[in-house]
Length: 116
Length: 117
Image (cartoon, rainbow over all chains, first blue to last red; front, side):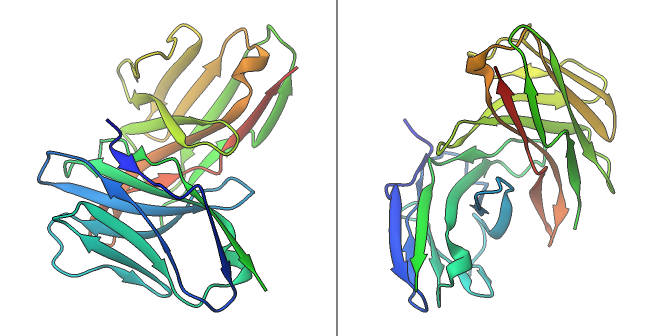
């Protein structure tokens, strides 16, 4: 079974609109971390936001917020006021456990296209 | 924030040759580094975990004799693609774990695009 599921291969949004990118995860470890990364065409992985499994509040970073629903095992990324520069591939990832030396497991990604 | 570099950023080689990719943590020490491979428009797939001073741990299906990993120091891990073939053409990304904002994060290198002719 997939540990990270991103069901939207592609999303289209107009500038200044908000968009939600879906992510569900599967783990039996009570301690885990959830990450969102942006990957533009250059290939670099740009960290956007992090949510720990014990965090009580949803994470926010500027225009990015994470809608964390632990019981449903979902961690959707919300981008408010989309900009043309937001066009990129977006990956949801999970680290099981709290140790730093554990690799991330990535979803298949969602390609976001922002139009003017 | 912590910086991870990769060299080269892009390499083109002939089939049958070997290619070495370096991954460096510039301002922090990394006893562990991770190597990922990404095909166009696909996800990052973990290839192996590189451990300083010991053997790398390879994921199932990754040929350890083909993808040689050496973690020579606390700031350098290398991936050597031996006898490269066109099917090895891919985007290779390394990462190193570190602490940022009070939690364990992964710092990614900019990636190396390998094209095997």
